[in-house]
Image 1 (cartoon, helix red, strand yellow):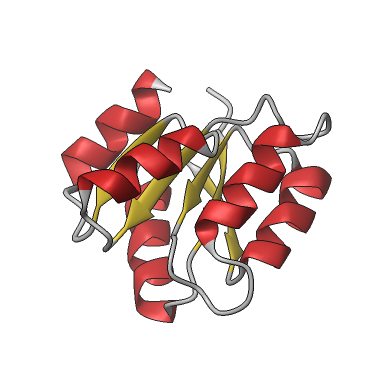
Image 2 (tube, one colour; image 1 turned 45 degrees about the vertical axis):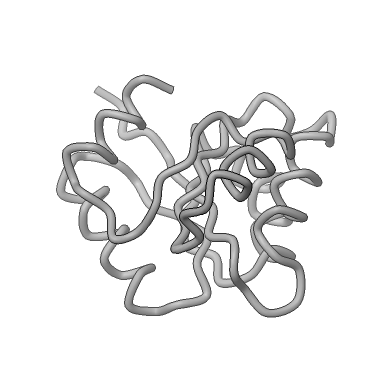
Length: 120
């Protein structure tokens, strides 16, 4: 089985490390990014199988990056799973409206995360 490549976007080194550990342990290849701008560049150059996107980041936030990635012909086919501390229903609806395929609230449960990834 080829390791699926997942772009993990989070400005928190702790969350980035935690998500990377979970994914690596489950056989995924991880490409880290710490900003929305970096996420857009890496989505184009790396063409990951999936993107895990945080929302609250300095500069371009995750909603803006999700919209940019899902609207670009180069990256529109890449599914985006938002992983955020923002747990309001309005945040979830807005995230899905920007082009995300699903929305998870931190702290992340490993089984739930892997299940969502496999379903996408």
